[in-house]
Length: 159
Image 1: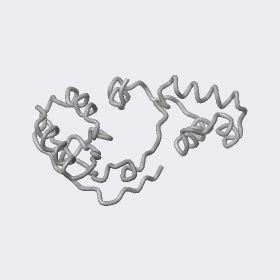
Image 2 (image 1 turned 180 degrees about the vertical axis):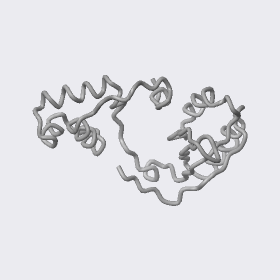
Image 3 (image 1 turned 180 degrees about the horizontal axis):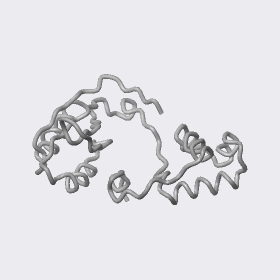
Image 4 (image 1 turned 90 degrees about the vertical axis):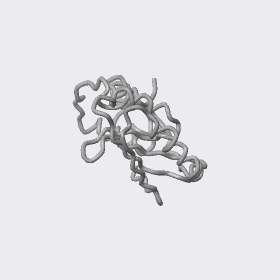
């Protein structure tokens, strides 16, 4: 199952009720997804068994959808990043969502309201590769009416 399959709005279930312990566990795992259950339990001040059952429930309920690493794009060779906005034809979002998710350079997709319909975070090895993604892949998709590109000069990850 791909990341696009987990996007809110695609068969989104009802909100899961969370208490303070759930929120503290989520905060710990957001800070360090590799943290052991024992360390989570110690940090949240609950037993290991309780932490394990809470994490299992949060995962089963879809609150925790995956555990992943945060990658420094520059060190990983992705030296060119941009936010690209898309204006779409009225009924093209559902079809385009899966196509956009299949492009390896597209790191984030958001359906938004405002002057455009979708905003993407695109990361590429250099500006030539970024140009290829925008001109040859995004702008040629049926249903994409217009794009606008905002180059990223510096990233600050707050998580």
